[in-house]
Image 1: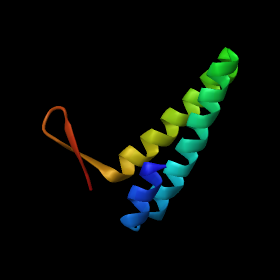
Image 2: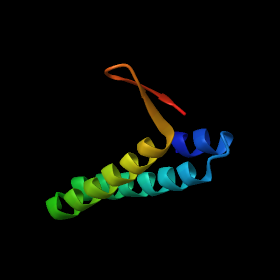
Image 3: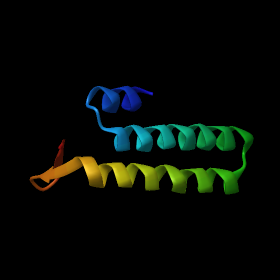
Image 4: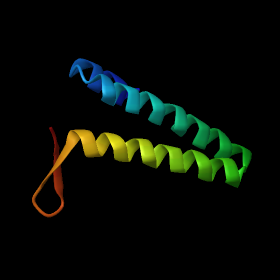
Length: 71
């Protein structure tokens, strides 16, 4: 939820979309984990990491060997 608001304040609709999808995947992951459903948890984790990756590629830039900043 924090990321959704963060990107709304920066008028980045694609990042809001990524954050909303990431939040939904995180909820699915938590639900599956609590239920002990490894298959559903693995699927939700893949969705979550894919969503994070898309946003990171669009809105992050590398500075130095291991540091990043928001574009």
